[in-house]
Image (cartoon, rainbow, N blue to C red; front, side, top):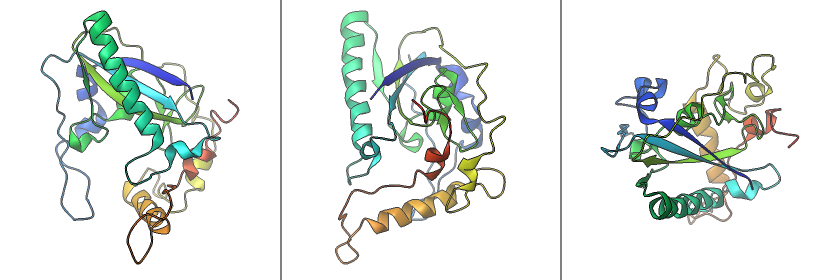
Length: 224
């Protein structure tokens, strides 16, 4: 699969809309405990390097959850680790790997990717890349150096004239009120997990194949 990268500055990311909306509260977990977003930024971090791995439709197994994560995310972690060592050895740049989840000290990856010029956030609430559409998965790294930002994109608006098949196809009608409702999406994800679990043992009998209906319906990137 193809691999992309982009750079944004720390300051505009920390003042982006997600940090305004979700600071400090946010997701409701199954335990009913609220989780707080804590942006754990290294004091000398100046830039964010956003990594994107293409997950093409013909390799759906990259997205299947096996109880430890997905193969695609493990690939991104290996790429991030190797790149961290390379940056230190060859360019004397100190890099910090970032957790995937914002509530665990990570960053809002879609916002970072937009600022880095890797795409725009579409009407399906996914990052849409000009070439690969929504078929990309993201990780990020903080860099202790100021690099020139590679984005955002200024002439890419694929949703403007689109009939939004992504919203129509959602099995839980997560866009029924005109915008994305995460709680409804979580309902579908739980159904997908239960389908792959032995009801007696409570263990996975197969990898969880989470719903990708809105992703597969997006016309951008389908002809790559």
